[in-house]
Image 1: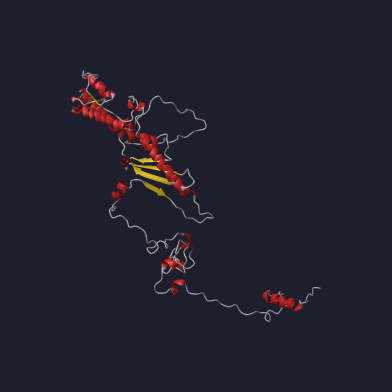
Image 2: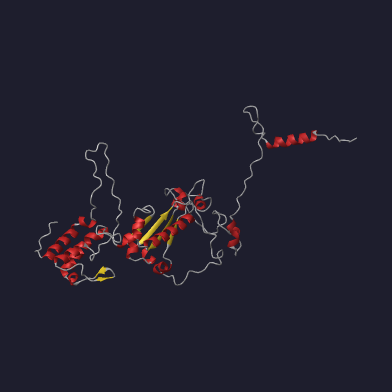
Amino acid sequence: MIQVERLSCIPLLRRSLSSATKQFPPLEIRGLTDVRTNMGPSSIVVERKKPLHLRYRDHIDWTNIWPSAATFNYSVVPFPIRQGYCKNLAENNGVSPEKYANAELMKIPNFLHLTKTHIQFCTKWPAGLDSDQTIEKYYPMEIVQYNYVFSAPSIRDPRARIARLRIRLVHLGLDEHAKRKIIRLTMGPGPGPKVAHYDWATDVLELTSGRCPASRQNVDYLRYLLTVLVLESKKTEQWEKGFPDYDWLAFDWFNSQSRARLLKLCNLDVKAEKLENGQPVACKLDEHASVERYRDALQSIWTGNDPLRANQWVPEPRPLRLKHDKFPRIKNVPFEPIPGADRTDCLSRYAAATRELIGLSPRASPF
């Protein structure tokens, strides 16, 4: 038979009850319980220890104290720092709060893990890259990315995926035809103004992308887009070789109808004119002073249509759409306006050059 020893459980139960009564305070009923006799011991005041940086030894290894990126800790950082904003001079005597329990210092990222002792194998800045012009010469492409820090449940900001690529068209080795074509491909009905932007003053082409979920993917897409644009702009299609006269991509005086009419007026044979590489050569008539002024006046009018000199894709302001419009808007205009013809100085130069070319006496400008 198995013998089971019987242990007394009463002392254990009493001990647990006694410990329970010490943990939970008794119920105090106003008028029945004497509060003075049931008062417990006074609370012990715990003195706050000194910050860690005051207990450092003379020579410390900062790489062991702050080995990697971490949130700011006032007790560890030895130098004094302040961050914050005071609404008025009465608050904190107009001085920014110190580092103790400063939430503003904990929000922003710090670079305490990027000291010289941390980065031992960092190469020095090249001595030859001493100016912005030299840097742009050897590194013409510029990639712009953004990082955002804000107080939110998620650290992912959807705006951080947007990437931008900037480069001057001079560094791409494009001729006049290719440069004009790449501007039309980027600023025209292709990528559009939301993706591409060209600055005529600085000759900088900027491509923007945010269609991919990651910033690195958008950078790769922009490099691919730039490669395609450069390769397509250097191609010369069959329909580009002999553009008609009404397609004024750029004003060409030697192939213009104005020069042909002028040669015909002077009884010069246009067909018997000398050609060099398929293009007409300048004759003595082109060197005349009045003809040069007439040519410059025409160029001042037609250069507004050249994409190398001005933006042709400025969006027109939307007119006010009334509910009951008495006069409907005119659509399908049979002609395209000339940007340079709206300027009075260009028209006055053209009028004076034409009268001088024909031999009429100059008169006062009507404009």
